[in-house]
Length: 416
Image (cartoon, rainbow, N blue to C red):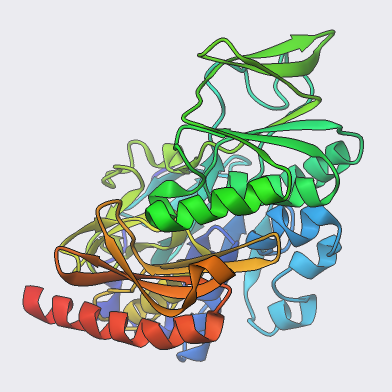
Protein backbone atom coordinates (compact mmCIF):
# COMPACT_ATOMS: atom_id res chain seq x y z
CA UNK A 1 0.00 0.00 0.00
CA UNK A 2 1.35 3.42 -0.99
CA UNK A 3 -1.47 5.96 -0.91
CA UNK A 4 -0.92 9.44 -2.24
CA UNK A 5 -0.62 12.07 0.47
CA UNK A 6 -3.20 14.89 0.48
CA UNK A 7 -2.25 18.54 0.98
CA UNK A 8 -0.80 19.28 4.43
CA UNK A 9 -3.96 21.13 5.43
CA UNK A 10 -6.97 20.03 3.46
CA UNK A 11 -9.00 22.93 4.88
CA UNK A 12 -6.84 25.38 2.87
CA UNK A 13 -8.13 23.92 -0.41
CA UNK A 14 -11.57 22.50 0.41
CA UNK A 15 -14.57 24.01 2.13
CA UNK A 16 -14.73 22.23 5.51
CA UNK A 17 -18.41 21.56 4.92
CA UNK A 18 -17.49 19.44 1.89
CA UNK A 19 -14.80 17.32 3.51
CA UNK A 20 -15.03 13.55 3.82
CA UNK A 21 -15.08 12.92 7.56
CA UNK A 22 -14.29 9.46 8.91
CA UNK A 23 -15.37 8.71 12.48
CA UNK A 24 -13.69 5.64 13.99
CA UNK A 25 -16.09 4.43 16.67
CA UNK A 26 -19.86 4.65 16.30
CA UNK A 27 -20.94 4.69 19.93
CA UNK A 28 -22.25 7.77 21.77
CA UNK A 29 -19.30 10.09 21.05
CA UNK A 30 -18.91 9.01 17.45
CA UNK A 31 -22.60 9.29 16.64
CA UNK A 32 -22.86 12.66 18.42
CA UNK A 33 -19.95 13.94 16.30
CA UNK A 34 -21.71 12.90 13.10
CA UNK A 35 -24.98 14.50 14.19
CA UNK A 36 -23.25 17.73 15.24
CA UNK A 37 -21.47 17.92 11.89
CA UNK A 38 -24.76 17.70 10.00
CA UNK A 39 -26.48 20.21 12.29
CA UNK A 40 -23.66 22.68 11.69
CA UNK A 41 -23.84 22.51 7.91
CA UNK A 42 -21.56 19.64 6.92
CA UNK A 43 -22.66 18.30 3.54
CA UNK A 44 -19.73 16.13 2.52
CA UNK A 45 -19.25 12.40 2.74
CA UNK A 46 -19.56 10.98 6.25
CA UNK A 47 -18.38 7.51 7.29
CA UNK A 48 -18.69 5.82 10.69
CA UNK A 49 -16.68 2.68 11.36
CA UNK A 50 -17.13 0.44 14.39
CA UNK A 51 -15.89 -2.96 15.54
CA UNK A 52 -19.29 -3.96 16.93
CA UNK A 53 -22.15 -5.21 14.79
CA UNK A 54 -24.80 -3.32 16.76
CA UNK A 55 -26.32 0.00 15.79
CA UNK A 56 -25.09 2.85 18.04
CA UNK A 57 -26.30 2.28 21.60
CA UNK A 58 -26.15 3.93 25.01
CA UNK A 59 -23.92 2.45 27.72
CA UNK A 60 -25.22 3.91 31.05
CA UNK A 61 -28.44 1.82 30.97
CA UNK A 62 -26.47 -1.43 30.56
CA UNK A 63 -25.68 -1.70 34.28
CA UNK A 64 -29.11 -0.53 35.39
CA UNK A 65 -32.26 -0.69 33.24
CA UNK A 66 -31.07 -3.38 30.83
CA UNK A 67 -29.42 -5.57 33.47
CA UNK A 68 -32.49 -5.39 35.70
CA UNK A 69 -34.84 -6.31 32.87
CA UNK A 70 -36.68 -2.98 33.14
CA UNK A 71 -35.66 -2.23 29.54
CA UNK A 72 -35.37 -4.49 26.52
CA UNK A 73 -32.32 -4.21 24.27
CA UNK A 74 -34.08 -2.06 21.68
CA UNK A 75 -34.43 0.78 24.21
CA UNK A 76 -30.66 1.27 24.54
CA UNK A 77 -30.32 1.87 20.78
CA UNK A 78 -29.58 5.59 20.43
CA UNK A 79 -31.34 6.22 17.10
CA UNK A 80 -33.74 4.19 15.01
CA UNK A 81 -32.90 3.29 11.42
CA UNK A 82 -34.91 6.17 9.98
CA UNK A 83 -32.97 8.73 12.03
CA UNK A 84 -29.66 7.13 11.09
CA UNK A 85 -30.64 7.19 7.43
CA UNK A 86 -31.36 10.92 7.73
CA UNK A 87 -27.68 11.50 8.48
CA UNK A 88 -26.82 10.36 4.95
CA UNK A 89 -23.81 8.55 6.43
CA UNK A 90 -22.16 5.24 5.61
CA UNK A 91 -21.99 2.87 8.59
CA UNK A 92 -19.27 0.23 8.42
CA UNK A 93 -20.16 -2.05 11.33
CA UNK A 94 -18.17 -5.10 12.38
CA UNK A 95 -14.95 -3.50 11.09
CA UNK A 96 -12.08 -3.23 13.59
CA UNK A 97 -9.57 -0.47 12.91
CA UNK A 98 -6.04 -1.89 12.98
CA UNK A 99 -3.82 1.03 11.94
CA UNK A 100 -3.82 4.70 11.00
CA UNK A 101 -1.57 6.53 8.55
CA UNK A 102 -1.84 10.13 9.69
CA UNK A 103 0.01 11.57 6.66
CA UNK A 104 -2.78 10.38 4.36
CA UNK A 105 -5.52 10.08 7.01
CA UNK A 106 -6.06 6.46 6.03
CA UNK A 107 -7.52 3.86 8.39
CA UNK A 108 -6.95 0.17 7.69
CA UNK A 109 -9.29 -2.44 9.16
CA UNK A 110 -8.89 -6.06 10.12
CA UNK A 111 -10.63 -7.16 6.93
CA UNK A 112 -8.13 -5.22 4.84
CA UNK A 113 -10.45 -2.33 4.02
CA UNK A 114 -8.77 1.07 3.59
CA UNK A 115 -10.70 4.27 4.22
CA UNK A 116 -9.05 7.61 3.44
CA UNK A 117 -10.67 10.86 4.51
CA UNK A 118 -9.98 14.58 4.75
CA UNK A 119 -10.66 14.56 8.50
CA UNK A 120 -10.50 11.63 10.93
CA UNK A 121 -12.20 11.57 14.34
CA UNK A 122 -11.03 8.90 16.78
CA UNK A 123 -13.82 7.76 19.10
CA UNK A 124 -12.76 4.21 19.95
CA UNK A 125 -13.62 4.49 23.65
CA UNK A 126 -12.53 2.03 26.31
CA UNK A 127 -12.11 -1.66 26.99
CA UNK A 128 -12.71 -3.28 30.36
CA UNK A 129 -9.74 -4.24 32.51
CA UNK A 130 -9.43 -7.84 33.70
CA UNK A 131 -7.94 -9.20 36.89
CA UNK A 132 -4.29 -10.14 36.36
CA UNK A 133 -4.97 -13.46 38.12
CA UNK A 134 -7.46 -14.54 35.47
CA UNK A 135 -6.88 -15.39 31.84
CA UNK A 136 -9.78 -13.24 30.73
CA UNK A 137 -13.52 -13.63 30.28
CA UNK A 138 -14.35 -15.89 27.37
CA UNK A 139 -10.77 -16.86 26.61
CA UNK A 140 -9.75 -20.53 26.51
CA UNK A 141 -8.92 -21.80 29.97
CA UNK A 142 -10.79 -19.12 31.91
CA UNK A 143 -13.31 -20.47 34.41
CA UNK A 144 -16.94 -19.86 33.53
CA UNK A 145 -18.81 -17.32 35.61
CA UNK A 146 -16.38 -14.38 35.38
CA UNK A 147 -17.85 -11.31 33.70
CA UNK A 148 -17.02 -7.76 32.75
CA UNK A 149 -19.56 -5.16 31.67
CA UNK A 150 -18.64 -2.80 28.87
CA UNK A 151 -20.61 -3.80 25.77
CA UNK A 152 -24.19 -4.71 24.98
CA UNK A 153 -23.12 -8.33 24.53
CA UNK A 154 -21.45 -8.25 27.96
CA UNK A 155 -24.72 -7.02 29.47
CA UNK A 156 -26.74 -9.80 27.86
CA UNK A 157 -24.34 -12.44 29.18
CA UNK A 158 -24.36 -11.01 32.69
CA UNK A 159 -28.14 -10.64 32.74
CA UNK A 160 -28.52 -14.29 31.79
CA UNK A 161 -26.02 -15.33 34.47
CA UNK A 162 -27.74 -13.35 37.22
CA UNK A 163 -30.99 -15.19 36.57
CA UNK A 164 -29.40 -18.32 38.10
CA UNK A 165 -26.94 -16.68 40.52
CA UNK A 166 -27.37 -16.99 44.28
CA UNK A 167 -24.08 -15.34 45.35
CA UNK A 168 -22.39 -12.55 43.41
CA UNK A 169 -19.03 -10.94 44.11
CA UNK A 170 -18.40 -7.60 42.43
CA UNK A 171 -14.71 -6.69 42.33
CA UNK A 172 -14.31 -2.93 42.14
CA UNK A 173 -16.27 -0.36 44.15
CA UNK A 174 -16.22 2.50 41.65
CA UNK A 175 -19.26 3.77 39.75
CA UNK A 176 -19.80 0.70 37.58
CA UNK A 177 -19.23 -1.81 40.38
CA UNK A 178 -21.66 0.00 42.67
CA UNK A 179 -24.33 0.16 39.96
CA UNK A 180 -24.01 -3.55 39.19
CA UNK A 181 -24.15 -4.40 42.90
CA UNK A 182 -27.29 -2.30 43.38
CA UNK A 183 -29.03 -3.80 40.36
CA UNK A 184 -28.17 -7.39 41.32
CA UNK A 185 -29.32 -6.85 44.89
CA UNK A 186 -32.66 -5.53 43.67
CA UNK A 187 -32.97 -8.75 41.66
CA UNK A 188 -32.67 -10.71 44.90
CA UNK A 189 -29.07 -11.84 44.49
CA UNK A 190 -26.83 -11.98 47.55
CA UNK A 191 -24.09 -9.44 46.77
CA UNK A 192 -20.61 -8.73 48.13
CA UNK A 193 -18.93 -5.57 46.86
CA UNK A 194 -15.17 -5.52 47.34
CA UNK A 195 -12.82 -2.75 46.25
CA UNK A 196 -9.55 -1.00 46.92
CA UNK A 197 -11.26 2.18 48.16
CA UNK A 198 -12.29 2.16 51.82
CA UNK A 199 -15.81 3.27 50.89
CA UNK A 200 -17.73 2.92 47.62
CA UNK A 201 -16.97 5.63 45.06
CA UNK A 202 -14.76 7.50 47.55
CA UNK A 203 -12.56 9.07 44.82
CA UNK A 204 -15.63 10.46 43.05
CA UNK A 205 -17.86 11.44 45.99
CA UNK A 206 -15.48 12.44 48.76
CA UNK A 207 -15.90 11.39 52.38
CA UNK A 208 -19.49 12.53 52.94
CA UNK A 209 -20.90 11.09 49.73
CA UNK A 210 -19.06 7.77 49.92
CA UNK A 211 -20.12 7.21 53.53
CA UNK A 212 -23.74 7.91 52.65
CA UNK A 213 -23.50 5.57 49.67
CA UNK A 214 -22.04 2.85 51.90
CA UNK A 215 -25.02 3.26 54.22
CA UNK A 216 -27.43 3.04 51.30
CA UNK A 217 -25.89 -0.23 50.09
CA UNK A 218 -25.82 -1.75 53.57
CA UNK A 219 -29.43 -0.74 54.11
CA UNK A 220 -30.34 -2.83 51.07
CA UNK A 221 -28.30 -5.83 52.13
CA UNK A 222 -25.06 -5.45 50.17
CA UNK A 223 -21.98 -6.70 52.02
CA UNK A 224 -19.19 -4.12 51.68
CA UNK A 225 -15.49 -4.94 51.92
CA UNK A 226 -13.54 -1.72 51.43
CA UNK A 227 -9.77 -1.77 51.17
CA UNK A 228 -9.89 -5.34 49.87
CA UNK A 229 -7.65 -6.70 47.13
CA UNK A 230 -8.03 -9.92 45.15
CA UNK A 231 -5.33 -12.57 45.38
CA UNK A 232 -6.98 -15.15 43.12
CA UNK A 233 -10.23 -16.41 41.67
CA UNK A 234 -11.06 -19.91 42.85
CA UNK A 235 -12.76 -22.39 40.55
CA UNK A 236 -13.69 -26.04 40.28
CA UNK A 237 -14.79 -28.09 37.32
CA UNK A 238 -14.16 -25.16 35.01
CA UNK A 239 -16.46 -22.79 36.92
CA UNK A 240 -15.77 -20.01 39.39
CA UNK A 241 -16.50 -20.84 43.05
CA UNK A 242 -15.14 -17.83 44.90
CA UNK A 243 -12.70 -14.97 45.26
CA UNK A 244 -9.71 -15.11 47.60
CA UNK A 245 -8.50 -11.78 49.02
CA UNK A 246 -4.94 -10.94 49.95
CA UNK A 247 -6.08 -11.11 53.59
CA UNK A 248 -6.77 -14.82 53.08
CA UNK A 249 -10.55 -14.41 53.29
CA UNK A 250 -12.49 -16.37 50.66
CA UNK A 251 -15.74 -14.95 49.29
CA UNK A 252 -17.95 -17.71 47.91
CA UNK A 253 -19.56 -16.88 44.59
CA UNK A 254 -21.49 -18.42 41.71
CA UNK A 255 -20.72 -15.39 39.57
CA UNK A 256 -17.96 -12.77 39.69
CA UNK A 257 -18.07 -9.39 37.99
CA UNK A 258 -14.78 -7.57 37.45
CA UNK A 259 -15.33 -3.79 37.48
CA UNK A 260 -11.82 -2.48 38.14
CA UNK A 261 -11.88 0.23 35.51
CA UNK A 262 -11.21 0.52 31.81
CA UNK A 263 -8.37 1.47 29.51
CA UNK A 264 -8.45 3.56 26.33
CA UNK A 265 -8.55 1.58 23.09
CA UNK A 266 -5.33 2.92 21.56
CA UNK A 267 -3.25 -0.18 20.86
CA UNK A 268 -4.14 -0.09 17.18
CA UNK A 269 -2.56 3.40 16.97
CA UNK A 270 0.94 2.24 17.99
CA UNK A 271 3.38 3.40 15.34
CA UNK A 272 0.92 5.95 13.92
CA UNK A 273 2.91 8.92 15.16
CA UNK A 274 0.17 10.09 17.50
CA UNK A 275 1.13 10.71 21.10
CA UNK A 276 -0.44 8.08 23.35
CA UNK A 277 -0.46 8.49 27.11
CA UNK A 278 -3.52 7.24 28.98
CA UNK A 279 -5.49 8.01 25.85
CA UNK A 280 -4.88 9.99 22.68
CA UNK A 281 -3.09 13.20 23.64
CA UNK A 282 -4.68 16.29 22.07
CA UNK A 283 -4.40 20.06 22.24
CA UNK A 284 -7.05 22.36 23.69
CA UNK A 285 -9.16 21.95 20.53
CA UNK A 286 -9.06 18.14 20.86
CA UNK A 287 -6.74 17.91 17.84
CA UNK A 288 -4.34 14.97 17.91
CA UNK A 289 -2.60 15.82 14.62
CA UNK A 290 -3.27 17.80 11.46
CA UNK A 291 -6.71 16.64 10.35
CA UNK A 292 -7.07 14.18 13.22
CA UNK A 293 -9.24 14.68 16.32
CA UNK A 294 -10.10 12.51 19.33
CA UNK A 295 -13.39 12.54 21.22
CA UNK A 296 -15.03 10.83 24.18
CA UNK A 297 -13.48 8.39 26.65
CA UNK A 298 -10.33 7.90 24.56
CA UNK A 299 -9.41 11.61 24.29
CA UNK A 300 -6.88 13.18 26.68
CA UNK A 301 -6.88 16.85 25.85
CA UNK A 302 -5.42 20.02 27.34
CA UNK A 303 -8.14 21.65 29.46
CA UNK A 304 -7.37 25.37 29.24
CA UNK A 305 -9.40 26.08 32.38
CA UNK A 306 -7.53 23.58 34.53
CA UNK A 307 -4.18 24.09 32.82
CA UNK A 308 -3.53 20.34 32.54
CA UNK A 309 -4.41 17.26 30.47
CA UNK A 310 -7.82 15.74 31.21
CA UNK A 311 -9.57 12.54 30.15
CA UNK A 312 -13.21 12.11 31.16
CA UNK A 313 -15.13 8.84 31.16
CA UNK A 314 -18.76 9.87 31.22
CA UNK A 315 -21.76 10.12 28.94
CA UNK A 316 -22.16 13.89 29.20
CA UNK A 317 -18.61 14.53 28.04
CA UNK A 318 -19.09 12.23 25.06
CA UNK A 319 -21.84 14.50 23.75
CA UNK A 320 -20.36 17.88 24.69
CA UNK A 321 -16.90 17.07 23.35
CA UNK A 322 -18.40 15.72 20.12
CA UNK A 323 -20.13 19.05 19.54
CA UNK A 324 -16.86 20.92 20.15
CA UNK A 325 -14.92 18.66 17.76
CA UNK A 326 -17.55 18.94 15.02
CA UNK A 327 -17.41 22.72 15.23
CA UNK A 328 -13.61 22.69 15.05
CA UNK A 329 -13.65 20.47 11.96
CA UNK A 330 -15.93 23.03 10.33
CA UNK A 331 -13.63 25.93 11.24
CA UNK A 332 -15.72 27.22 14.15
CA UNK A 333 -13.75 25.70 17.00
CA UNK A 334 -12.97 27.05 20.45
CA UNK A 335 -10.97 25.54 23.30
CA UNK A 336 -12.98 22.80 24.98
CA UNK A 337 -13.26 23.69 28.68
CA UNK A 338 -16.18 21.78 30.20
CA UNK A 339 -17.18 21.51 33.83
CA UNK A 340 -16.94 17.73 34.44
CA UNK A 341 -20.26 16.08 35.23
CA UNK A 342 -21.53 12.59 35.91
CA UNK A 343 -24.52 10.95 37.55
CA UNK A 344 -25.43 7.54 38.87
CA UNK A 345 -28.72 5.94 39.92
CA UNK A 346 -28.55 3.41 42.76
CA UNK A 347 -31.47 2.02 44.77
CA UNK A 348 -33.71 4.72 43.34
CA UNK A 349 -31.40 7.59 44.35
CA UNK A 350 -30.04 9.98 41.71
CA UNK A 351 -26.51 11.09 42.67
CA UNK A 352 -24.94 13.92 40.65
CA UNK A 353 -21.47 15.44 40.68
CA UNK A 354 -20.54 18.63 38.86
CA UNK A 355 -16.83 19.46 38.84
CA UNK A 356 -14.66 17.38 41.16
CA UNK A 357 -14.71 16.57 44.86
CA UNK A 358 -11.15 15.87 46.03
CA UNK A 359 -10.59 14.12 49.32
CA UNK A 360 -9.24 17.34 50.81
CA UNK A 361 -12.37 19.34 49.91
CA UNK A 362 -14.59 20.97 52.51
CA UNK A 363 -18.31 20.44 51.85
CA UNK A 364 -20.98 22.98 52.69
CA UNK A 365 -24.59 21.79 52.57
CA UNK A 366 -26.70 24.43 50.83
CA UNK A 367 -30.00 22.63 50.29
CA UNK A 368 -31.78 19.82 52.09
CA UNK A 369 -30.25 17.62 54.78
CA UNK A 370 -27.98 14.53 54.41
CA UNK A 371 -29.79 12.97 57.39
CA UNK A 372 -33.02 13.05 55.37
CA UNK A 373 -31.44 11.58 52.23
CA UNK A 374 -31.93 14.68 50.07
CA UNK A 375 -29.36 17.46 49.84
CA UNK A 376 -26.96 19.54 47.77
CA UNK A 377 -23.43 20.30 48.98
CA UNK A 378 -20.82 22.64 47.53
CA UNK A 379 -17.19 21.48 47.64
CA UNK A 380 -14.41 23.98 48.34
CA UNK A 381 -10.71 23.25 48.00
CA UNK A 382 -8.18 25.83 49.15
CA UNK A 383 -11.00 28.34 49.37
CA UNK A 384 -12.17 27.86 45.78
CA UNK A 385 -15.43 26.23 44.67
CA UNK A 386 -14.50 23.03 42.83
CA UNK A 387 -17.57 20.81 42.83
CA UNK A 388 -21.26 20.22 43.54
CA UNK A 389 -22.65 17.03 45.08
CA UNK A 390 -26.37 16.49 44.56
CA UNK A 391 -28.23 13.71 46.35
CA UNK A 392 -31.82 13.08 45.20
CA UNK A 393 -32.28 16.82 44.50
CA UNK A 394 -31.68 17.21 40.72
CA UNK A 395 -33.41 20.58 40.30
CA UNK A 396 -31.51 22.26 43.13
CA UNK A 397 -28.27 20.65 41.93
CA UNK A 398 -28.68 22.19 38.48
CA UNK A 399 -29.28 25.59 40.07
CA UNK A 400 -26.07 25.39 42.12
CA UNK A 401 -24.19 24.32 39.01
CA UNK A 402 -24.48 27.86 37.65
CA UNK A 403 -22.20 29.14 40.41
CA UNK A 404 -19.63 26.47 39.60
CA UNK A 405 -19.73 27.32 35.89
CA UNK A 406 -19.10 30.97 36.72
CA UNK A 407 -16.11 29.96 38.86
CA UNK A 408 -14.81 27.79 36.01
CA UNK A 409 -15.16 30.66 33.52
CA UNK A 410 -13.11 32.89 35.81
CA UNK A 411 -10.43 30.21 35.99
CA UNK A 412 -10.29 29.94 32.20
CA UNK A 413 -9.96 33.70 31.92
CA UNK A 414 -7.18 33.81 34.51
CA UNK A 415 -5.15 31.15 32.69
CA UNK A 416 -5.66 32.74 29.30
